[in-house]
Length: 204
Image 1 (cartoon, rainbow, N blue to C red):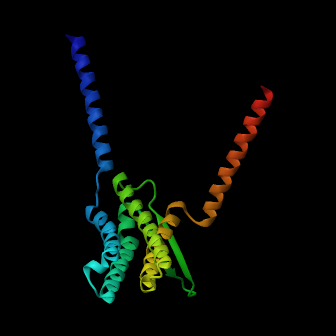
Image 2: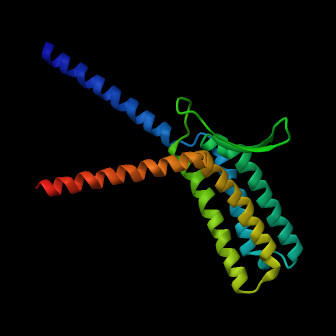
Image 3: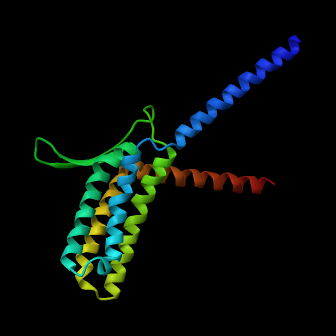
């Protein structure tokens, strides 16, 4: 009986640990900021939909253009100031020092602090990368079809969403100096690996 009781206790502890790991993984996949996740995609997707369906929605080019510009502006402000900070812990902005010089600041949340969930990170980067690519496609289609009246709207879409993409990539990977050091270390490791592999083949 004693042996059976000890086995039961061991099984209870194992099941408890499994439940704890399951709860951790579920929390990691859970969307903690549903409103921010929704508006991260709402404004930019709405701008694309209005651009595609403009002729069906309204015959007024001015109304469609103003609507798209407002959606793009709201998207730029929301992504730059709210969703990036909440969903992935990144933010960037411009500040002017006492000498009147303008500086761009790129920040990322420290690794020891609370991190975002995988679901929110996927939503953020998927929307941040895919939508500027779509606007670039719109730009080429506008040029090739000689639809000049939409060129200003498309350029604004590429500029605003491309600026957010560039800013958050800088926040994620660091400054240009960090990029150079990462590339240098990678190339150095590849060179050493090839050197050692050649020496091993020569010895054999």
